[in-house]
Length: 271
Image (cartoon, rainbow, N blue to C red; front, side, top):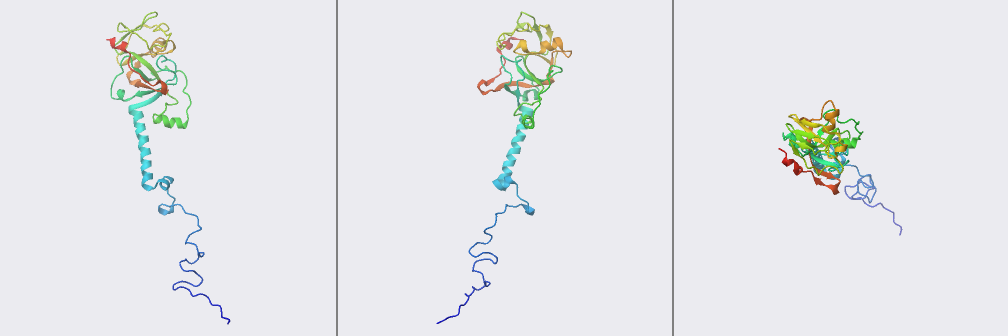
């Protein structure tokens, strides 16, 4: 017997032509919103959240950013007041330090008022006319890292020498004789092999004024130090205490030559 075809009855609360459990305007058998591209989380006003917050989450992103900023500030403070790395610019300290070596310089002691002592290796600003070569150009990355004290400045105009005498001392520097301070001859095993104490720039007897230093390189025959400046520079060969940046305490690079830079025992005999 023939029967007439009839449409299935709709569930209560649904519109005809839709299946139960589907939203109007969606394909049957799919969930609401499926088949669409996921949208990035947005902050207030519908603006995309910063990448750091999307990856790490809001609280963790703020924590990481705070740690980075704190680390940069701490590095800047350390470089300004505590320790800074300097590069050896020449061969004038060979015997102890070679060109290109990195040394850690204690900047806190001078800042606290401590004065350099005989025998210490110190870094100081050019007192005037000691450096004649133009500075080497740097780049942006080196400039940023140098401000943090992680690398030396590209335009660094500082020098490094050994303190031989301080204010009030008398230096005797004559050809063919050992270097003397206050009448005491120095035993200088730190000199570069083949170097002479004073033969290339003998200055005779010099009295160091108060508030100044007399400095010399460990490679005496390749160092335009106090002797050379005293003879050839109208400003003289003395270094003002105010120009001292700090004491070089540790040779930090190359790593296989890591060493401290103590005061040689010979200076303990000088009075």
